[in-house]
Image (cartoon, rainbow, N blue to C red; front, side, top):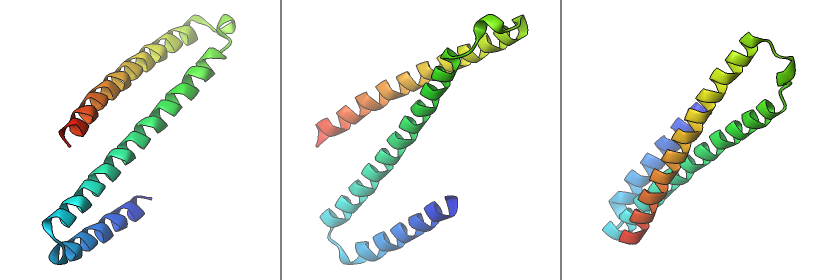
Length: 109
């Protein structure tokens, strides 16, 4: 997976280098804008995948037999829930920051 990403980047750089020697400035700018959009989409997909993992964790926690747990297990569960809450807050803050920066970048065009 990592190797294919590295190879894809080398191919993209080679294509851009070859393209830039034969392209006008506007065509080159368009290619760089497409690459920027691709990276933004890739980052958003990663964020959505992390959200899916969080949702699965929340659902599995919801189904836990809390009544049958000993105090140590309950303390561990509480600590896990606190970490989960912090991660959710961080993801929400990241999403709101990305939304505001995305809307600002669209406004400039």
